[in-house]
View 1 (cartoon, one colour):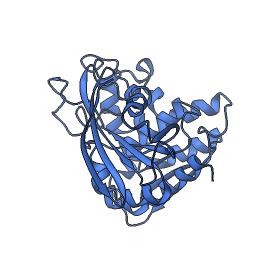
View 2: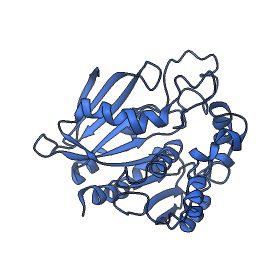
View 3: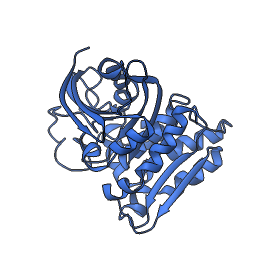
Length: 297
């Protein structure tokens, strides 16, 4: 596997690195990702990892520039890896026509419909290929047996379904303003109908909807935590988020978690919107939660 380092920088004692590689999962396209390594990471003292999934229109860079994560990685001795939000340069005629579909909007699903199915396979990229790529890039200093996942908006949706569809794979999961019920919101319907097919039932939309997955979890009498540590699902949501009612629907997720017996804490944050100002304000809480789960404290 050919993984090339393209950038190195330093902040708060942490090392920031950017890599690129050719992804078989994404149909042979080149993919970029960043890794933040805390000062203590070494072959003798490998650190656990958080995977951050970004939202609509973002790349692998946004979180590293805007979130203010470096000081918290240093304080809590964890690494963070940030993959991209979609394939890039697939050459599909309509992939750049809108900001909420196509490039920058892979929605963390495996597309089944042409012309998207060859390249738009972000669920398998994040959950199957990306850990192998990370092992090649930073496996000498990062313990890839201890991994948690979190994200924002579309990325919060991606983090939740990654944990729900892989019970016990991740030590913990959290989200900022996640798209909680994509089968019942305009963003989700637009992406799912194109990537997965027009019929919600026949096309398996529910398999990529956190609320629906939790309800299926409850119906199967499989109540209980979905992550290895048993830690609660932490969700922060800005009360002044303009997307709250129509697109995000945290109440649906909270109700489904309770029905499924999955520990959850949904915190409505007054005065905050959907931006990285909001994320930066509460990021320490999330990293502290994940670090506790990953370090066993």
